[in-house]
Image 1 (tube, rainbow, N blue to C red):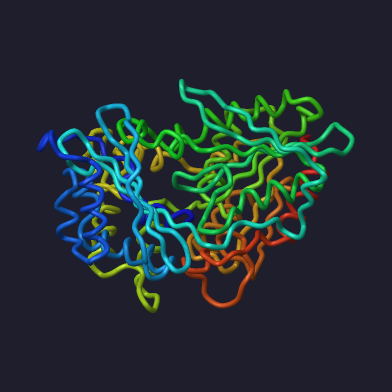
Image 2: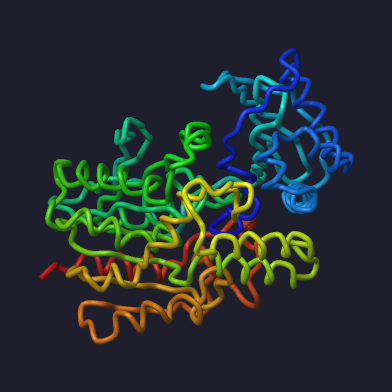
Length: 444
């Protein structure tokens, strides 16, 4: 799942309060009962198990839409596995319940607090089809190294793909889109950033990709009301740049940042803190204010046949968007009143950041790519911001790929979230354009 779709259905990632209700409750029994209620369509009963912050962020209508949307991806559920559990800091217990469907697995991931209330909930689908190597990548031409990035007292995992061709190599650090993505930006059976990494590494470019803090340390993030968009990207991106620049065989003067979706939006902020990078590549980077775009995307999802959001869910997103836009918004504004359950501090950071104005102040070259079929980040609402703000810059190149959607998968007709669940690969032309630009561009 990518961008707004993940944020619309990534249930309450920033719920923070703990409630004490029934200390004797068995977390595994709670997990089994919750799954039974979801499978039988008893969404109101399931929602009664939520701690107040989760209940506020995820009303029954959104829970129902989320469940039906994710369950449809795996088909009829034939079997529910036993819950697995692990203890988490703060007295939380994380449980995973795998549900085997006709076309894949739906995993219900929940955290239960000491009072027996469901503190967080996430639905993850894994299609039967597994990722395969794109035709344009040759894994025999590069080596991969698993490394760690440590920043701000938190460590995340990363993979470095290094070509076997003669050094020195240019290099890129990849930034995934909005949501708690792993290093591959795994979306159903697809791994767009792995496509890109392997495609570029096959063309003589070293590539570093990393798991986001919100993916690796989700519970820590949930207990940090001051956590921001910048916290989720910048510290580990800077550490990734540092490690890539110091890796044997990589030319430290030719390391670039390549960001997709929100990763493209925040790439100029990363560049502000890393003046030694050689340039930026922005793939479907949004410039429209995120709370405005959320309403646009929600209305689009409600217009599909069948609709992916119902009218009450759209109305809730409209109310929360208006609350984010309110001048009285503060760091202590209740997350339950705000979009996606993100904190006031998170939204103040997003609201106060202008990616185009930040890019205008950079002296490095930029390549900006956009899919013509993208409904999440669009030509009219987002690419126009880059075009207007960077007009006249000879070191800025902008390209549109008319057949591509938000993940740069080529197709026809209107794009929908269901398209992301079909096994595909990033458009080879996109890989070629990025690879050629990185290989020949030199920072003035």
